[in-house]
Length: 157
Length: 184
Image (cartoon, rainbow over all chains, first blue to last red):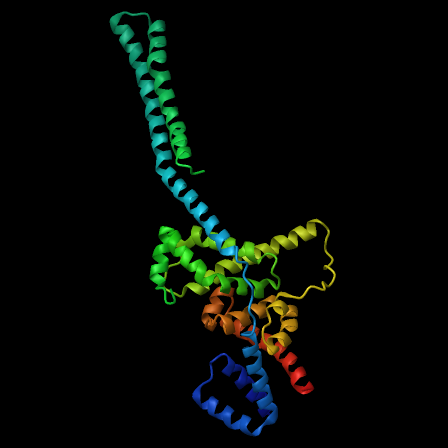
């Protein structure tokens, strides 16, 4: 089988450009290009391409860094705020569940208390709803509103 | 901050440390612009993509573990955003039935604008017409000095594919040089 020596040498040159050439091939290549004009030209042109790639200088918009930092700072504040909010959400939910459970217990207890003290059930239940259940629910729902207002005062949107 | 310790970067990104990010932006801004210009072959979307890349670094910085160099990770983030951008651009152009290529613009390509040496000027035109995968391979290997393994990680392809892209890219540009060296 005929092997084209120049083709083999050009493959070695390609490998050398990637810095993957073993020492023995490097020596073979050096000896070959010393005597072969076409392979030396191939090597020279390859080196010129690689060097030429270093001859570009791209202009960077001078405003870009300022814009990037402004958006990073804004986003970092938003992320910090959302991280702060996460545990608060669970506190709101826990308070709501406890309030609802407490209200159900209070409603049941008012029925029992009415029976023991021989009081009329209707007015007693209305009093429990008006004086216990509704205020505690309102108070519970007020938490997120107050927190949102406090966050607004910090100037974080 | 020439040799910023990768663990220090990873810790800072986990803390979302804006001061560290500022140093990183200063250090990598030009390289990011250059990489995205090579990838897209145009400048119009590069600034927006640079900004999006840094925002993504802030948001997903916890996924950088500091065990490998920061650059390949940064270029992977930028690359994913650039490909999303190209996909959206293609979809929107199909939606508007704007399937025809825009007419050849007389404006010079970003490579022609950036060429500072005689050889770079010779390469500029070929670079503008080269496929993005080849341009990307060339910039990552010869400008960013990434190893073949690092490049394979960035582009999500085997090392053999990455090597072949470099060889093909070089061959296309070498043809340009051969033309001029024969003419001299």
